[in-house]
Length: 53
Image (cartoon, rainbow, N blue to C red):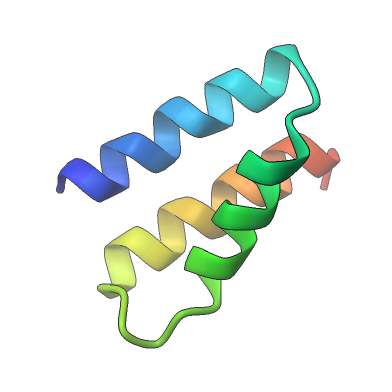
């Protein structure tokens, strides 16, 4: 749950500024099959939010 919450916080940071390493890390998390589904989902949403999708 902490990692999911961290993805949400990261999304909020990316809404305010472009932080490429943070965005890249979220993208990696969103595609990592070793991460729990809830964490991958939060990371996917964060990446989508910051890219305007």
